[in-house]
Image 1 (cartoon, helix red, strand yellow):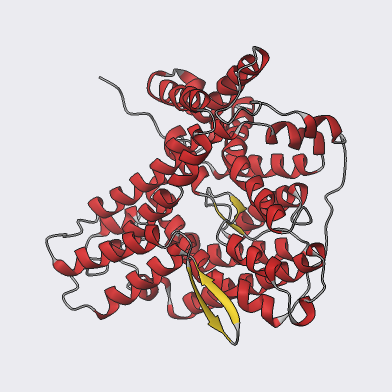
Image 2 (cartoon, one colour):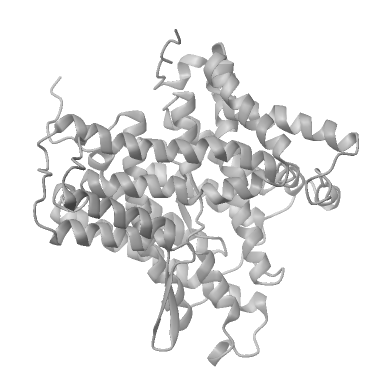
Length: 458
C-alpha cells in the first residue's frame, strides 16, 4: 500500500542544495510556456515582436515583486499570459490612423501600452476588494463558480499539451512515464523532483534519438542547436519603452477581465493545493495588486503581461513542497538566464514533445484540483441551478476557444473563453433563484478554497 507523501512547508529542512534543485524544477515547469508567448507574438509581428530575454527578466522580477506584495506567503510564479495573444495579433493587423504605414516593430510598444492599462484595472479591483472586504466579494464566487472555472483553466490548456506531445509521442511518453515513476515509486529527494527528472531523462533520450538519426513525426530534427551556437554568453535584455494609443488600449485592456478571473481561480487553486487561506491572508487585494503591478511594469519595458502560472501549481501538488522560497529561487534563476542568451537558448532547445509530456500531468492536476474544490464544498448537483451554472461555465470556457469578438467604436475587442465563462458563472449565480450556498456555513470547504470564516485561535 502506497504511503501518503509528507507535506514540506519549510524547504530549509531539506538543505540548500536540494532547495536549489527544487527551484530549478519550478523554472523548468514555467519555462516552456513563458518563452512560448514571445515566440508566438514574433509570428504575429513578423519577427519584430517580444524578446525572450525581456520576457524572462520580467517573469522573474514580476514574481519577486508579487511575493513582496503578498507578504512572502503565496507560492505562486508569474509567467507570460497567453490571454493577451489575441490582442497582440489584433494590434499587429491594425493599419488605420496612426498605425497606417507603421512597421511591426513600431506597433509593438502600443500593444504593451494597452497591457499597462490592463494592469491598472487589477489595481482598481484590488481597491474595491480592500474597501468592501473580500468576504462580500467572495459571496459572488461560490464553489459552484470557482470549481468549474479551475477545471476550465486546466482543460483549456489540454489541446496545447496534445499538440506539443504529438510532434514526437515517444519523447512525450518518456517524459510523462518518468514523472509518474518518480512520483509514485521515487525515494527521498527524487520523489519531490519528478518534473525535473522527467525533463532531464527525456532530454537525454532526445539527444540519443537525435544522434542515431531519428526525427520528429514531421521529419524535422528532434534537436536544433542553431540558436545556441549563434547566441552570446552575456547580453543585456533589449528593453523598449511602451507607447499609448486609445485604439490599442481598447484592444488590450478589456482582456484583464479574463486574467483577473483567472487570478482569482488560481489563488483558489493554490490555496486548495497547499491548504492555506491566501484569499484571506495575505488577502486577494494584495495578490491582485501584485499581479497587476508586475504586469504593468513588464509591459512598460516591452514585456508580455504576467499571470499566476498553473504549471507551477501542478508542481506544488506533485512535489508536496509548499515553501514560497523555492518559487523565489526559480524567479532568481529566470532573471539570471535573461542575461545569458546562450543558456536561455539551450533550455529553449528542449523539444516541444517533452513540454507536451510534462503538460499532460500538470494541466490535468489543475483540473483535478477544481474537481476537489467542488467535492469538498459539497456542491449539490441534484439542483438544476447548480447544474446550469456549471454547464454554462464549462461549455463557455472550453467552447469559445477563439474567444468572442465584438466592436466598440470600430475597434474589435476579444473576450477569451475563460473571461466569458467567469462572467457567465458570476451572473447566473447572482440571478438564478434557489442558491444553496451559504457563505461560511461550511468552514472546512471554505478553508480548502483559501477562505476561512472561523480564524484559528492558538
